[in-house]
Length: 238
Image (cartoon, rainbow, N blue to C red):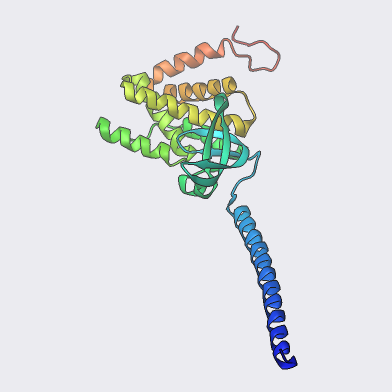
C-alpha cells in the first residue's frame, strides 16, 4: 500500500474516531439538556410544596405530606400526597391539581367573612328537590368555601324548620365536614372548637331570621340573666 493510500486509510480512521467522539459528546449534551429541561418543567408544575395547607374540592382541607412519583396502571406520574382529617391520605396528580380545583386554604380575615355568611339569612333555594340538590352539589364542587358555607346555613335552616331527606342530611354533614376542616387549619383551632362555633353561629342566625320576634326577645331576656355584662363576674339582673 503506498503512502497516499495509507494516508487515505489513516485519514478515514481518524474521521471515524473523531465522529464517534462527537456523537458521544452530543449524546451527553442532549442527555444533560433533557435532564435540566425535565427537572425545570417538573419544578414549574408544582403549584404547591410539602407542608402547604390546601383544599381539595369535595374532600376538604389537608396538608401536603409528600410529592412522589407513582406508577399507576403503567403510567408514571408525580402526585401530591395529602393528609386529610382523620389521617386519611389522598393522591392528586401534580399536573391536574389546578384543573380539579386544588387551592390554598383561606386566611384568618377570610375565615371571619365565612362566619359572617353563616350569620346571614338563608338564600333562596328551589322547591324542587332534584334541582335544589343539584344546585347545592354544584356549590360544593366549586371548592369555594363561601358557597359551601351557604349550603351549610341553608340546609341547617331547612332542617330546623321542616327536616331533611336522607340525601340532604348526608349532603349537610359532608358540607359541614368540608367547611370545618378548612376553618380548623385557618384558625389553628381544634375540630371540636370550630364545630361548636359553626353550630352556635347558625343557631343565632336562625333565631334572628326565623323565630317570631317575641320569642327572640324572651330568649334575649333569659340570656341576660345569666351572662355578666359589667365585667365583675356578676349581673345586675340577678
